[in-house]
Length: 355
Image (cartoon, rainbow, N blue to C red; front, side, top):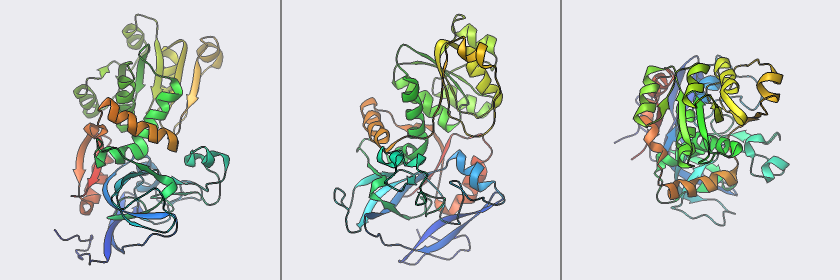
């Protein structure tokens, strides 16, 4: 089927479609020339590109974009791409045409301490660029990616699995590592959107007993369909679920102040709490809620390259497909519909797919 942009113009053999954000919940599907890779770069034919809640907050809903790591520069959006290499630039030893790869969504400077550890997300250098923010991202037929940002994908994983690993599943995995989740733990997750559900899947695969709190009826239904034990959003119900002892590990994936506070309330003595959800605030009394309970409180932001490589191997060993959390799939031409639905906060993960 012919590819066409929002104006009904059909892409020529040298053109590609790409989604550009306009702000105020508007976007356009436009035509672009198909790019060629430079030194240390590959061109990938995108096979799946998933939508992320951070893009709703930082790009889609915004009226304008301030300078900083989250500034949007009018490029092709989407920072969760996965696809197949179809052209190599010079200096791409270790990669071949046909390789199935995930793109880690930040290209760092490559020389700072964080980049050397594989934490490109934490790079503060002036050369740091985020795919879909300062350089073209994955909501397009093709993407140019630096080889330092590529993770090869096991054959077990689907392209949608890989796209989810690029951000959401990687974020969930890093958070579980931060809390050292194991089969000894009862885990509570507040906020069962896509990231919260990814945490639930990984915690369960790690052997933990998983509980969740979610207010959206649609997302509660999705969580139940994946056998997540739901409890009421109050401390009494949470403590009752653990025979009054509290949860060994609590994750907040909502960014909501009450949910963050509840995690500290119902964490077991010597427990671990991880804040994963972006935005918002929280106020609490450190002595009774943190110090006297000997709680360890972590902040966790995305993952490292090494963690992402470990994760794709583990998903294959666990026989776990993150794609099971996708509730809606669209073609790129339907981007406005996809983002409008995702913006309601009532869906699971939403994905663009290619044949």
